[in-house]
Length: 282
Image 1 (cartoon, rainbow, N blue to C red):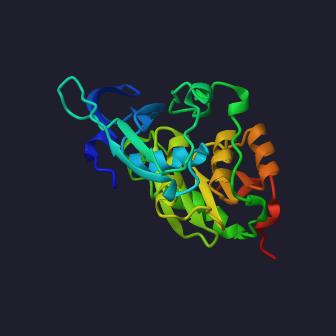
Image 2 (image 1 turned 90 degrees about the horizontal axis):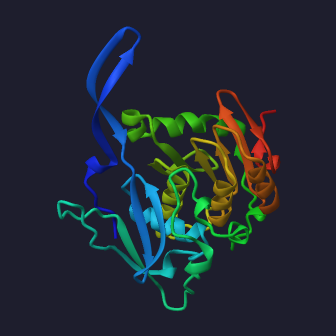
Image 3 (image 1 turned 90 degrees about the vertical axis):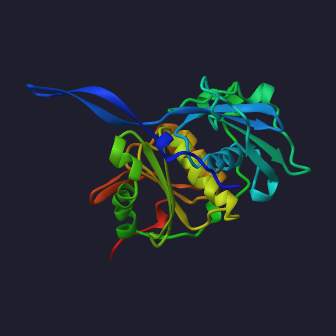
């Protein structure tokens, strides 16, 4: 069930006028691709998200898990690309249809979501305030993971070093799953930070590794409410970001038992919730 896509669709080449001081040149530039992905359940539309093509099956599994539709790989009986053609008659690989396993309830799509999430905000598709918060099936607060400060401080450079498409475009977010000892398990890139997180969580879902006990989710941008919720839904005890958290992210992390780390860069960071998981040097 692996994703098979032309590598070139992850990026695109376009002519640009390059201005650097008094020097003006026209040259091709590489930009990150952004295309819609429609997720269907047994043929019924569930959501459309703007994403960077690639790792689409990971994205779908992660999306379904963090939305509370599934709790693991066994809840998915099968998934496939549907025929969706462009003006030239070529399959765009932009529609994925999912069959849930027998007994897995189908969500009420008419009330919960209006079927669109942008690359910048996945919560924006929710149709009501009550639909925003999803209850996790995992007891994240009971996770006794401990991460040494020196391991934590090394994660941003580790994440950046693995961002292959970012090197070409400068336009992608990244999410990486690390063990408490600093071993990288998986990394995914996407124009949307929530998609990058869904992709890396989806990889864990497909491998049967949920909950992600004793792991750190490292993200390249800010720590939003939504990313905190996704970490909790996957049973990840530590969420670390190179930028700032939001007030709701801090509130939710404190409530569900996630250690939230922000401004992780250089030789320092801010630990906003549950600091007992961070082992400081003597």
